[in-house]
Length: 246
Image (cartoon, rainbow, N blue to C red; front, side):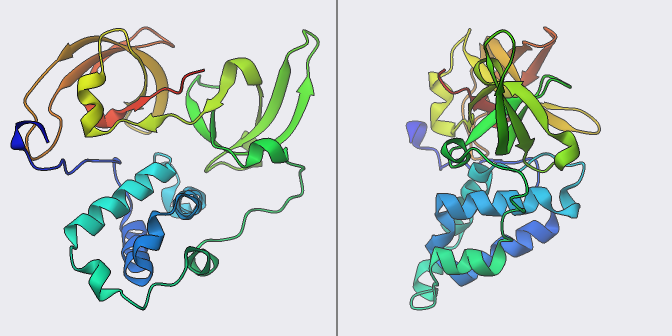
């Protein structure tokens, strides 16, 4: 790594609950490297977001679960050796720990439901992970809309959104190594933290203050301007996600 610094102990997420951490610790001990599988982490994130303990808290993304497991495994160098011969398959772990998908009372669009998307809510203009696509329609102007269910929300929060304007592949949290690739003018997805909630909005970088990284990771400051209201804020890298190319 540049400057001979230790790998960053990245703050991937504002905070998992005590119960979530205990559950992940248990799964890591039981399943070893199997917990790093993408599908496994996706199901874990969905399970967390649907639980009562996460009500009112930021939504967990699957990549944040995977990053937690990766960092924890680095902290436990002897874990792989200790788990030899006792690691069940990913599918077996999922069947024990992850609840099954909700009832298919409403028809999903199969070609979309297997991919990962985020959609912009018309209620607050923020981007949320899509749990499932429940239907589609063509409106009078000839554009297609899909009915989405957001991760962590019930049917009462379902929305019809414009496919072209308000649906895209999920944004990816920026890694420490990507810090130097960011430049003024870049479009990002930024976590806006408020007293009672933390939600993601589109923004663009207007200024960067580069700082030497240390054991805590990236110490650079990014001045961003939110697209929805033109407000400005100074944030750290941990709150930024790279927007997908559309």
